Structure formats: structure tokens, C-alpha cells
Length: 268
Image (cartoon, rainbow, N blue to C red; front, top):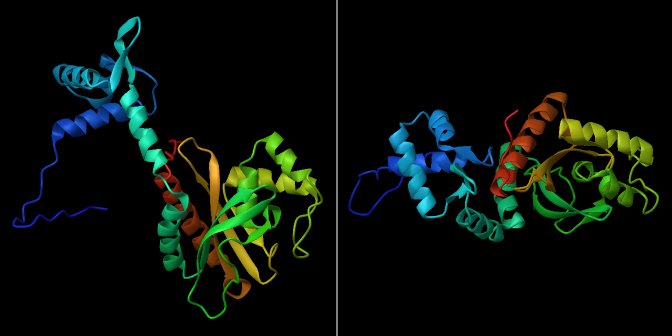
């Protein structure tokens, strides 16, 4: 999105500063590499040697880059960047950010959108935006449901490591909410493997026989799945074409929220 800035008393657009842009380009190279040489920076950004030298000297003078001990021509990120990142992370609020994104997904689909987190073997809904249709999902913020019966729950369970998943599945019997709920631990494990690969989960009447739901993972800056976003609709509106469109919408919404939480998708 292009943001238009307007200043009182002038219609002039402010000019971006090329030197600042180039400095940020240098720093962003280190997102994928722990350390780089001046030559590597020069080659990757296709900048003149003198320009790269000046940028590196300036960033090192402010400690945004530091020379690798014993390798003076190699650089790595400095402590001020960690401090800035920590300050940013400390101000993140999952519920606030989720409300902004979920509202957009609900408006685009005109169906119910939820964001939930895992609490033991259950999910708890943190955010909900409803549809405008007269026939809609009955749910509420703060509601708790068995994770294995819901799309958001299956996403969250699929994000656990083997020991964490074992701890959840051995707490007790998997009780069903409908005849379609998965209550066999082995079947659930196999199902979660598919969810982990596909990065999307579908609830086909497993928590409510009259509803269908699709969910995608929300990740934090470290790539850990911290929540899930779902889109739900009554079976009367759940067509194959609608499912394709809603899967894409919820994936895009979850990706947008993950980006707000600091996640940076890796190029494939």
C-alpha cells in the first residue's frame, strides 16, 4: 500500500533518502546470512566499492554492524538491532493485531472469523468477527473447545513437537463432539501429519454437524505457531468453490497476522 503523506501548508511529497534506503538494504542482507564480507555486500547489492565502504563504516560506528573478531573484513549484526527488535516484540499484542486482520478477512468473506490459541488439550477463542447472514455460527470470545475437534485446534496441535503432542494426547480419552469427530489417537496423529504438510486444516462437521471450518497457522518471529485463524460457515453455504476461496482467504489472513507478529516467511 502506498501511503500518501500530507503536510499542512504544502502539497509537496517528502523525498526518501537514498543513503538511508541503501543502509537498510545492507542490514536486511543479514536476515539470511549471519555474517558477510564487504565484497559480498557489494556484489549482492550491486553497489560501488566506495559506497559500500562508507555504509559499513557508518553502521559499524553506530554498532549496528560489528566486525567479526579475528576477521576484520567480516561483519555481523550488532546489539542495537537486538534492542530495537526486543522493544518492538515487547509492544506486540496478539489480540489487538488479530482484531485488525480478522476484521478484514470477515469483511472479505462475510463469514465468521476466529483467532484461537492452544491451552492444554483445548483451544480458547481470543477474537471473533461474525457474518451478516441470518444463519451464522454460535460462538463467543473466551469459549473453550477440544482442540482435536476444531480446525484451529488441529492447526495448533500440528505445530507441537512429538513430546508435546504425546503429552496432550495421553491426558485422557479423545471425546467427540459429533459423530464425525476424530477420537482415535492414531488416526488423529496421521491426520495432523497431513495438516502439518498442507498448512491448512478443515473441520468437516467435527465440532458442529451443521458447520464447516478452515484454519491456517499464525507464527511469531521465531517461526513457532502461536495461534490459528479460522473461517467458519454453515454447511448450506459451504460449496467446493467457496472452500477454495476461503482457504486462500484464511491463509492470506494468517500470513498477514504472522507478519504483524514478526514472522518472516522463508523463500522456497
